[in-house]
Length: 188
Image (cartoon, rainbow, N blue to C red; front, side, top):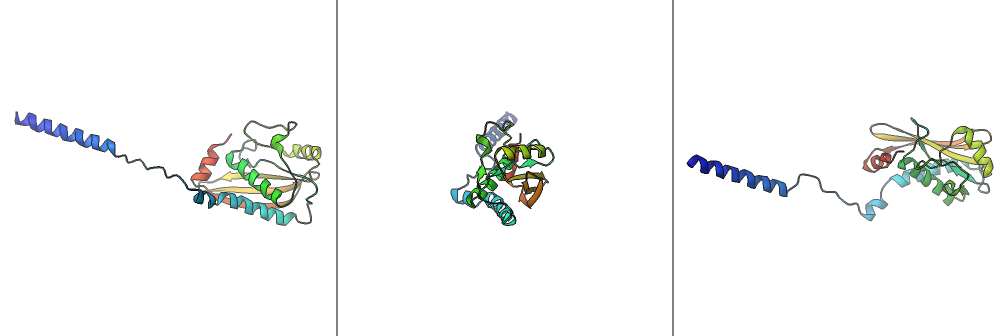
């Protein structure tokens, strides 16, 4: 009888501890970022800074009177694929060129341009000339990104479509933090 009570008390204690253990979770609580933290995120400034470098290199080579086209930045290991990361880099660079007075052709609104679903404006070298001619574009901004375990390495170029000559180039790296990792998950 004593053994039975001790066993029952032990089981009751184990159940109580188990229930108490269920009420407190070891799972980390998700911290919701603030607007101040969002404004301080370095992703957009890094892309704008890259655009600034390109803008500095094209002075006296490219005019603001004739349009430019920005292609989607693609994965260097699969040139027909991009990600949310690549599409956003292209958007940020194009925006900075527009803010600097360049006329950027918005490819997402053009029906005559092939658009792979969720890929953005992917372009192969042979397509650059035809596309630029159809929009009278004097240059095309293209880019690739490659991944390592710690960084995303980005290469941007401004190319004159008539000759395929590169007139500006810039390389930079982004850290693979949670933001970048989530943007890469949007790969298609």
